[in-house]
Amino acid sequence: MPSFNRNSPPDPDGVLLVDKPSGMTSNDVVCVVRKMFRLKKVGHGGTLDPQATGLLPLLVGRGTHLCQAVMGGDKIYEGVLRLGSATNTQDAEGEVVSTGDPSGVTREALEALVAADFSGDIFQTPPMVSAIKVGGVPLYKIARKGEEVQREPRLVHVWWFRVDDFGIPDTRFTVKCSKGFYVRTLCHDIGAALGCGGHLAALRRVRTGRFDLKDAISFEDLKALPRAEFASRLLPLDTI
Image 1 (cartoon, rainbow, N blue to C red):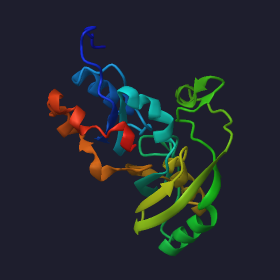
Image 2: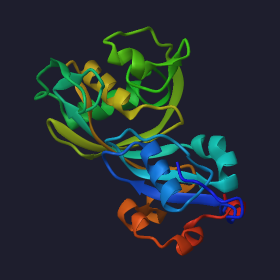
Image 3: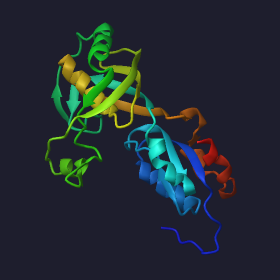
Image 4: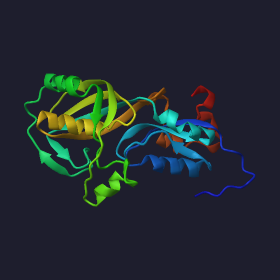
């Protein structure tokens, strides 16, 4: 943790849009920014899994009070659905727990399934590898012990799902969904419904609420940003 002089200037206030790289947690990015720019109050507006990339809003100074407002917006993700295998984490980081033959799946069948069963208001059971707490304990900590507990399905919303590039085993797609939606669970459930298994092979967040990835700074450019220029990259609170 950096030390702060009582006479040091106050943190600037605002929201910084960062393009998170793969291999870092959202909290890793927060810690790097706090240390690099000697900030007292930094948070983020919505967790991305370590292997996921894309839009991560960082909340600075009084911007931390906007956490719930920022996290509550709808999200748009680009992803890769890999059919033919299911994993214990529902993504490519986990161990394969079942396999099947996806060769008979067509684009028409996939789109019809999503339109019928995974559009609008749906109930989704959160994955075991998640930060949701059961009895005060995050599910991922329970999963590390090789245990599984019952999870209550949650009502979420899928605004639309678009197949961008159909293929077997990998299909690229874009989805717009509500807060609390798990894209990897969608991929797992689609694979199960098709009878061949499936998981999320890649994920990139391109929009959250009113914020867009095109306005984000890359992590490499952020690390090279002079401290004196940091405040100029923030979106002012009165524009949020």
